[in-house]
Amino acid sequence: MERQEVVGTGGELLVHQLNAQGVDFAFTNTGSAEAGFFNALLTVPGVQPVLLLMEPLVLAAADGYAKAANKPAFVNVHLAAGTRQGSGQMQNAYFDGTPMVVTAAMRDAGSFGDHNTLGASAGFSQLETVEGISKKRWEVWDARGIPTVTRRAFKDAATYPTGPVYVAYTSQALEEPDVKAHIQAADAPHMGLVPDEGIIHSIFDALLNADKPLLVCGPDIMAAEAQNDILELSERMALPVVTGFFDYGSFPPQHPNYIGQVENLSEEPYDVVLCVGYRQNSRGIPQDLRFQNTGTVLGIGHDPNLLGNTFPLDLAVWGNVRHSLRALNALWKDDYASQPQIQARASQLREQGEWRVKQLEDEARSLATEKPIHPIHLAKIASKVLPEETLVVSENFRAADHYMPFGFNKGQWRLVRTFGGSLGYGVGAAVGAQLGAPDRPVVCSLGDGAVMYGSSGFWSMARYSLPILTLVWNNMNYQTVRTNFHAHGEEFVKQNKYPECFLGDPAIDFVMLAKSQGIEGAVVHEPSELEAAMRRGTEVTAGGEPYLLDVRIATVGGGADSTWHQAYKLRR
Image (cartoon, rainbow, N blue to C red; front, side):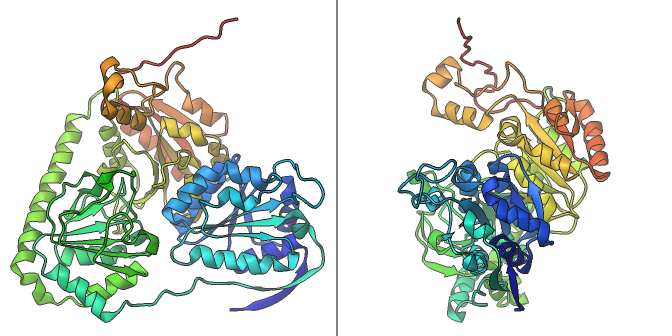
């Protein structure tokens, strides 16, 4: 790779290194301790700062960008306090393995004063604030080391298993003048192209000869851009497919081979299970130990820590899943398709798939006129109205994403979400995703509870004229928590009371909230008005501006009729 020698401040060396790494955007919430970096943005062109008004939004935007653009994102936040502020979304990124370089300035906590504003406390390191949610961490005290550590950070963030890394630069290092350094970009080391031939043959033969196989798909498939490869394997061998927790991006939910989420799978006696890119989303309970009655369990994935972790594997392959899938597909011969077990499975999957799609369609039709608007009707109208190639950033666990046309073929939609569960992801991630996929329509789909964790992100949408359509599925509820409380039973169900789940009284005016930050929108109450309102939203976004739809939907699931909350008024 090209190497150049530069002279400048530590901050200028940092920006030169970012340019060499191909960084287009610096997701940030500014701080004066980072003045050396921001001053360098004025003297060294090439990196566009993207301002978000809270650190969690900054981290979420970087995550959405990295997933949409399929490249590492760059973040700069403010000292130890800003790092801590963004830690919930950094935890999401760590859980998902999202490649990003998170940076901040750092203050000396010992040479002179040891009780500094926004910095690490005496006796502690700023790196400790991210110890459990970052892949690696560094401090930089000498400005000459800024290019080296930054290069290393990008390399490690993108090396399997990918994930967020953290760098703290002292303010003095960022501001030091007349520093000479060499700038050279770094790529992640290339994973071996093909696993051992005998291993690939073992996996292929196990699938080919299986009577009752199962394919479990996960997010590594999208990260490796192996969508067509997994389709080819599943269709040729007529493999039934399940995905992880609300993961409608790893395999098309409308495909005939798709049979649901692994969490809802009955413990049938499969003779071969192949997990490809599946990242276990465990609850720390015995039910995490899946496939107890399975003959052979195989795994291919990017993170060795997740291969054979929750449940044991008989054979595991650590590496780029695209290379492994292509090696498996290369062993296929056309006459294998005539094997009786493959033909029987293919026929059964077609029949089950047609039946499942019909059931979904019948259910959607039966709910089309319900008031309040049923979430399934909202999903169906969105599927009908929103344009091809839509990228949906979803922070919506109890809605109806499985009704939407997610898939891998041209024209189908793409899903971006986090599986870490820390709320506040959706609005920021939509900002990053639109920057990472500028040619795709982007929809931010989230519940009313999630909006309030990141609502200041609407300001960033407006400032940068990001044509994002925000769909608020508004049932005035923390619905996921309420349904979990209901499943818990006891006094929740006896009294039909679900503490601190109802979000009315007062109802939040999301249209006014967005309008105060420069975004127009509308409220939709009537199912008959939904299609026209959504078409209006797509027209506005097609014209280059963001828009918000506050859709008042029905609560569903256990305790849906409860609006109880523990009222209190201050007494003076």
